[in-house]
Image (cartoon, rainbow, N blue to C red; front, side, top):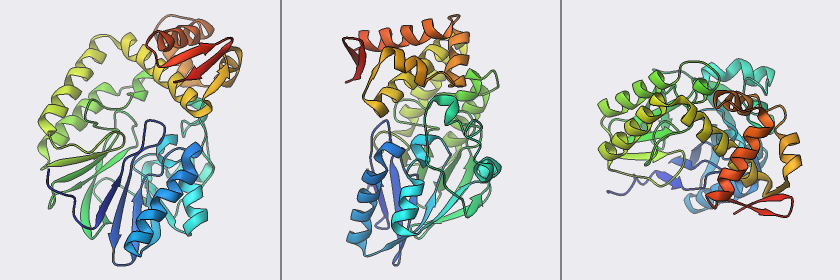
Length: 303
């Protein structure tokens, strides 16, 4: 793959915190997404390294969507650098009211420090990032209010959780009894029509074999559609694993208490035909069997 334009920096993170893309224009910088709250100070430090190297100041955060692993560092970055926040327009009312259920934080058993947005982006708008113009596209599926950014000139796509090298994010609307698979397919078809030579995803490494990634994504989507309960089982395991990535170790009884109000996890349990306590135990057992968690006495431990 050719190197990124000199005005862009890609910070690869992990599966608890999303990646960051930093665009430099003159002495001003914009960062796309900010990771999870647990890693907020790490996000500040990583962004500061970029700013110091480029002698720039952070003026703006842009969020692709408002899942906690993409906006959990917003507050810390604002406190550290005094920047503004731009969010998808469709999420503006929930942020203004700070409705943690609608914002999915409480519904998934996660958390995010409260922040205030300064501006919004709508599909059809143009985002200026790193001296480049990026087309803003709607990307429903994983999140009905998500957007992605495409630079036609450079053949670059900031795909958030709409496309990874090996799949895409949980299709949350389907867990909650709403349409999401059809929307995810439409997003994949949109990406296929764009001029894309490199994808900067929300998680995982940058990649350039777009056709192969799209083929894998379509295969996974077809499997989900053919067996929605399989998708629900996957979602429940992902959410339990995320919780353990956050807390690192927890009494199994406390896991049930912590996830008591996580309605998305409850909906996933209902889809697989188990009561909630049984479903959480099944998810923990499955993750232990896969080597993704371990038991230490009565505690579950992340590995």
